[in-house]
Amino acid sequence: MQELVLIQPGRSAETDLQRGATEAALRREFEERLAECGPLAFRVARGVLLNTADAEDVAQDAILRGYRRFDKLRDRGRFKTWLVRITFRLALDRAKSSNRRQHRETLWSQTERKPAPPTAEDLAAANQFRSRLDHAVDELPEKQRLVLLLSAIEGHSLEEVAALLNIPMGTVKSRLFFARKQLAEKLR
Amino acid sequence: MTCHHYKQALLELAARCAEPAPDLHAHLQACSSCRSAFENERNLFASIDSCLRSSTNAEIPSSFIPTVRAQLQRESPAAQGSARITNPLLWLPAIGATAIILFIFPRLERRIKPQPTAEHFATKRIESPVATATTTANPSRATSTSITTAVRERSASKAIRPDKNLVRAGSTDPEILVPPDQEILLARYADQFRRHHQSSATLLTEVAPDQTAPLQVPLIQIAELDVKPLADPQRDGQQNDLREK
Image (cartoon, rainbow over all chains, first blue to last red; front, side):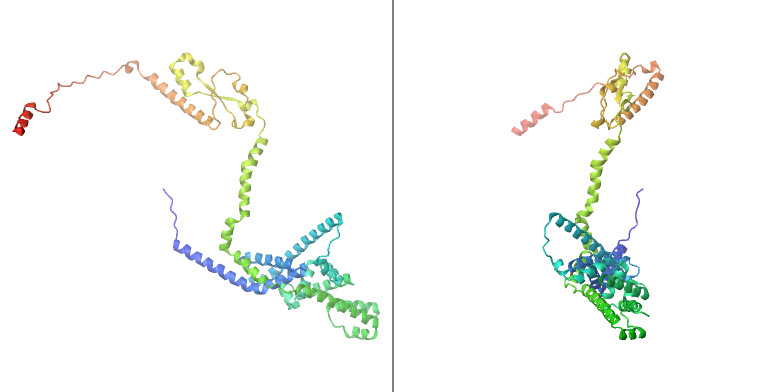
């Protein structure tokens, strides 16, 4: 005997409509947050990479990842925290890979014994203090570095940094203190 | 308290961006070296902060948010659905799996499979229907009642094609070369034929010889046929005369 399956075409169309409406609402919500979180993601990436083009790439990547997982976030109020962390992580990865690439290129140029022409980066690194500072910041522990970075972004008080990272205010202060102290020791 | 201790406290103050306590303040007023060291530290931290601020608060490119919005548009489910079909990366696993099935598995199987031995080519003797029929019809040709078929594993594969001498060893019976995918079917068919043949043979033995005599059918009695002509020639001639008149 042939098996019969009970279907309800009217109801499935209704479900599709509901799903479409939910997706549209999610998208609207995300775009509203984008206006606030997008620049923050860019600034975090820029603070790590010190390069606008790379920072743009990394921030876009982080935002897209956030969008893909936005509907799965249990607490959407913490989206900003999540985005800051993922941007910071992606920026660190990018910085490491670019450092490796730079190292390889340096080795290659050494073996070839070619005088490297001055690039825009070299010119930017002419400021000795800045390059030493960048180097010192690179060596900071990640937690301290993130707090230092966020506190350096305009309009971010220490309370906001604590709220953003979901950590106590005392932790933010201590991390910032140790980070600054370490930087000063290396730059002195 | 010595200047060394004051300096340590002042450095920490500078790192915290805090104002000195009254006793430290009094020492700074009195000690010029501590004051200059404190000023240097403050300047150092100020330059650190300004560098960090300048690097983190760089101007956001005007194209940043529109580019992100455009990418989000591309990420929408409808666009994703159409992109999935055309995305070559999604086809790669399927292509890879097909390649593995087509090329790698047969080669691996060939490598793993041991070299064929004489046992692999052990012959299987099955009775051919044709040969059995011949036997019943003509018992004198009993020597050709069976057909030897080489039972081989994957005889289609050239790598393990059996040695003909091995197959023929110890047998003078006729042979049939059977395609590898038909040997089982042939064996089944032969088995069925053998069983049916045996049952028919038992039926034949039980039949009495007098029952096999030809049937006596009485001849059909047909009466003589009365043949009548279809047309009357005299009547036709009269009708023609009337028409001429």
